[in-house]
Length: 346
Image (tube, rainbow, N blue to C red; front, side, top):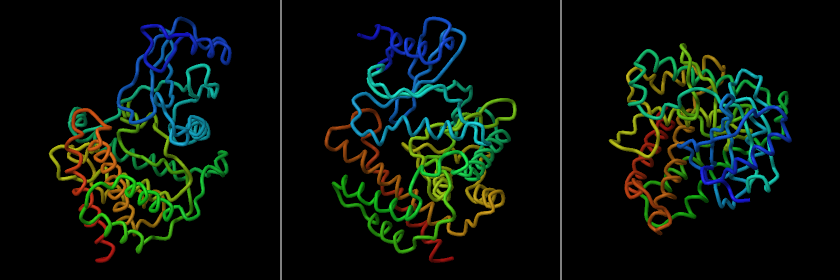
């Protein structure tokens, strides 16, 4: 069956409607329409409506080949497990692993109203007081996530927390080797120093894997977090990797333009030190080694950006801005080295 001309790419609304009617009779009351929600980096996300109800459909990118990187069952599982806990997630509607419906596995969840703030300019529209409240709420939500007992919500086997940091470091080292097309001053020094100073992890928790302000929806008069999104990198592991990544995203990059979302320049934005202090006070965890976790976040982002640059040099990536990414990678390496120096000086 060929999708109708007004169906978004990757979403056959007639087939979707048929599956929803069979799996959830009465859920849909009328003809469906949909739009692709922009901003996703890998999996495709659509808003679907019948004119009264609204839902979100998530599926892998078109022509995907790495099932493990776009695991709909995994995303749906963690959202279903966390729904009903203190962690705000959309209510799951259904998971479909029958590829004959849309050409790939997909899942449906409720539509949640809210704004994903990506830049300091966007935060300027709500002012300093609301900005501060929203970002501090992000920390509180992270504490709530890390307080969930994985076994109690059916996620006891969601990952392999033993040796988590060592595996992460080796994984991103291999990623770097796979996209190495030029000399990068300091990258091997940073990778080696991270390996020599590997901290002892606290008790494992559910880890989001990409926890930052533009992966949550904020709304309502109290600017509370209405939903945490994009769980494709979630697992069981060291909770401080989430905090380190949040600190990195909340740091001043010292750049006039960057492919990495940062809101640190917004008036009222808490400092990284405030975020760490609030997390430590509310979670009771020792954050004394947060410099390592933040330096690891800088390293990981440097590797990701170098991979994009490498593909660009091979002509495999096109679009505005990709030509500048290569010159930004050394900035992330330098931030990582400077951050890690805090461990030696501490």
